Length: 273
Image 1 (cartoon, one colour):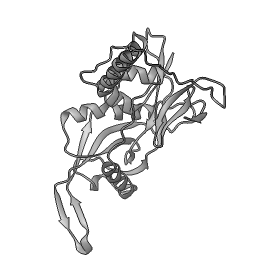
Image 2 (cartoon, rainbow, N blue to C red; image 1 turned 180 degrees about the horizontal axis):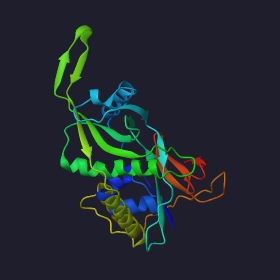
Image 3 (cartoon, rainbow, N blue to C red; image 1 turned 90 degrees about the horizontal axis):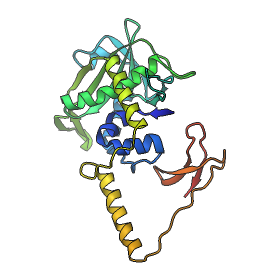
């Protein structure tokens, strides 16, 4: 079996709840989406626009010499095979920014707002390794930028508010560069562990630490009470894809729930709920 893995799921969902991770990757059942607070998305977007085509070394101390050239581009890796495992995977996602360094190599960077910490740095390392692997080992027709020699995080650390003219308010603070050491051997070993989890039995739900598992357990308990008391139950019929005839699954988008083909992204058929 071939699994599609996203850098964000490998960063957040895998450690957050392996049950929800397997349900999403293997069975297409996703948690309800929680968008990033708009203020952080807006700050990141403004930074990308402002720093595009600017020299790295002028942004923060410690940055390598180079120029930011690429922002928010989709990447996809070639299939990844593992010794002794039948299942394979590929990585697909969208990076923040990539800089072209003066020596001809590339640096993959991510904008963050807040104070850096070791826990955050270790967590985001998987995301950056995913993008680097995709750029150096792309699928046919996917973006190629190689070699990738630097990985790191660019933190904007708000420290002060300044009241300017015409009632404008400015949020000021330093930019801090946190370099991340690249370790492809450890990253591929981690992906091998992910494949073992996906190929194995579904991990038990974690209602203690995962809010979605807690919600599902309470919902199932309530449903059991309803059935036991003689209440009628209903089941939503699963439609066929209007494009290829395959089974569809419910997904959450920016405008609410919709039916999506289970063969996505190979088939992009949708239906309204």
